[in-house]
Image (tube, rainbow, N blue to C red; front, side, top):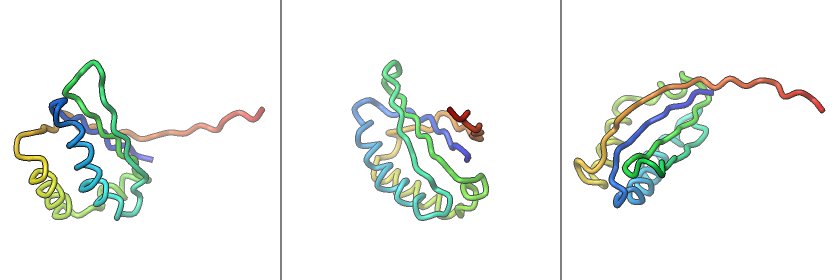
Amino acid sequence: MVIEWLKIEVSRELQEKFIQTDEAIWTATLAKYPGFLGKHVWINPKEPNEVVLVIHWASLENWKSIPADVLEETERQFSAQMGKGTYRLVEVKEYQVRKFAQPKP
């Protein structure tokens, strides 16, 4: 499994709109592609303008196979709904998840 980790700066007042719009536009688009396993939204109580999106992919190949024009159009739709300049992508990370066998009781 691969994790796409995105830190977003968005005002506390617009966070709920951001989360709902992200679900309706971004998550709906990503869910159409093989290997999309789900998404978590993390809110940092100590950083009022921070939202972290944690997207789970079956493989790096699944994630990176989404056509660039689809990503660009999805961002265009999202930006149109949110309003220009209301959010900012601050940081992008990629993680591989390793699983270990659990000992049997």
